[in-house]
Length: 299
Image: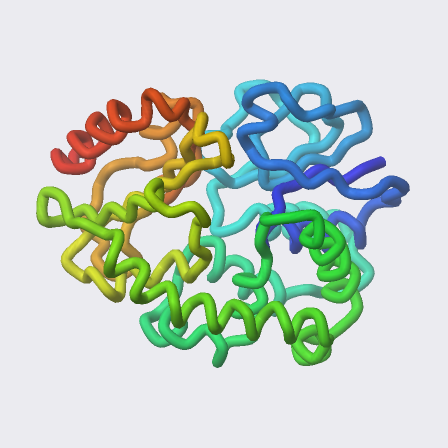
């Protein structure tokens, strides 16, 4: 039995909960949603998928994204909820299959994945251990998967203060604080405002895609009710990643982002999502998306 999930904080906490409830006997498979949508991932019977689109080859599935609702009856649980980890937690706790409670961990995972943050939490994540820890979860190189697995193991047994005291966690979190500091100027240099309400951070001119707090744009450009981030997905510049989000401080965007991006092979929540595009189509799709966001009509 194997856990198949996404390498973000919600996925890591999903793995914590599933490990506690199930007899897991194989290393976790960490994949992105596009790998499921494009049938690039090797999903097999016995797999427990979480925080990803449904694949009929798996045995159990948990998710919460509006764009991922499965029509067929599935083993597991789906619910429009703040986090997939919360969905899995509710499922296993109601079945009395968890040896301990994870209420605090799920509480913060819900806040983080639903972007239910206040301005201080965005500007000073170092003052909020769970938020800073979540920002240390990245998917950049071969050093990251072992770190995800270590976090799963530590969060199963340790308090948040014990986890934050770990030397590797401390180093990665210090790097996050510095990245966020530098990201402010990068955002200012590469962001333009369209229709007076949409911020676009276009990083395609940069050889290295910058890392930084994805919510900073809403503090720096408070007039925007939605943000778009564009960057190349590969060094060959053949594909582009596009992310769209509702402002968490200016809640006037009515467009369902997950449904919008499902038209381009992506998906997500009503308020945030992403997709992968052929680089040759990116500008055309951007114009289409801008027109829809600019009209600001409910789907």
